[in-house]
Image (cartoon, rainbow, N blue to C red; front, top):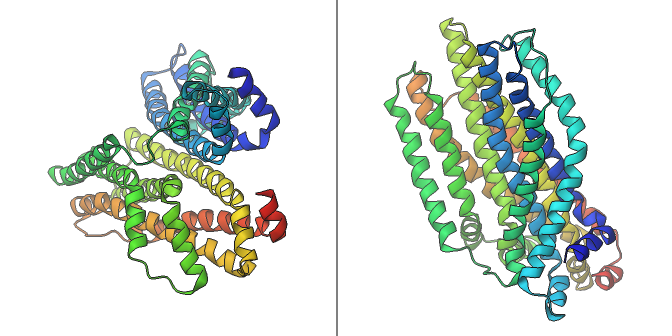
Amino acid sequence: MFLLAMRSIRQRPGRFLATLLAAFLGAAIIMTFNSLHDTAARDGVDSTSAGTLTTAASVVCGYGSLLVFFAVASTLTVNVRQRAAELELLRRSGATPGQLRRMVVGEAVAVALVGAVPAIGAALLGGRALLDVFRDSGQVAGSVDHVFGPVALTTGVGVTLLASAGAAFPAVRRATGGSRRPGRARTLLGYAALVAGALSASATFAFSATDEALMAPAVYGAILLSVGFALRAPRLLGGVLDRLAPRGASGWLAVRNLRRRVADLAGTLMSLILFTAVSTATVTVQAVESDALAASGAVKSVDAKNLETLNYTVVGIIVVFVCVMLVNSLYAATTYRVREFGQQRLAGATPGQVLGMVGAEGLILTLTGVVCGTLAALAGIVPFTLVRSDRLLPTEFYGIAAAVIAVAATTTLGTSLATARRVLRTPAVGAVAVG
């Protein structure tokens, strides 16, 4: 099966570009920040600088590992679903589910390894640039030089390979006879995350306005609530669709298609919810804290600067990864619908109506994702603001939320419409024949 996996990659390299890009970005980010561990372990580095570098590396690499897993999983899931006929043919030819899993896992590991190798050079440059940022802000001594050593190399390559192999198993499970409905464990995890998030956000009221740890329960509460919403993404989307009364041919087709593809679009909705909640909550809470310190005339401590840098860095990583995940999954999913679009046009739909249908689908997905994500973010922002500044909702929230929603809408709608326009260039008869 390994030889078959390698032949599959050689015959269809374009199919694996999304997974390759996710693996490259993940390995580059993990190695960039883990190089700070190598730098901190160097002889002659003072304890304050070493603590700053170690903390930054540990926090961001934890987020990075999760993002690599989700990014690779999202691309592999789309890939495997589009190969359903191929995998079914292999099963009818005598391949067992275990052999098919080994084939897909072998493909994922091989692609991840190819993506991790060029990431070494990018991580080397990125680590030096990141260290310059810490030195310029006074968080690390100017005499500290960057080191790219075994910790960065082994963890970067190892985490990327393990995440890719682990993400391949759930991606291929459905194609090899797994259940199409979310399991009980996922439902229980979703409810557990919602309860834990609500408790964490409520715990903010137990702190005083000057506590250094005040931001932690608010942000963690918002993140856990967004995870709970994300795990319930199929149910949320189904509930929204049940309450919609579409108008016009494009709206009716959009709702009908979304109902049929709820399971396939759950990953996209999960990405939107997590992106909106984590970005809005983290940046808003950090902005409120920075403004409160500036208003009081207090000078930021080294720990406060470290936390601010980490918050903005984590948000930046999330933005990059989520945009890559959304573009990859939406591009692949829309391109795969070439036959569907051709059939609709042969049945009498105009290209404008097909584009309207795709736009309506993207709009429904975007609104559902940003509303759920914003609600999760507000659950953490409101308690923090009440304790920190005696206000219900900070003025900083509106501009940040608008920027986050604009990025989500532009990425989702822009990718869907641009890809659909490209697909529609194929004549309808040719599209049906190709499909």
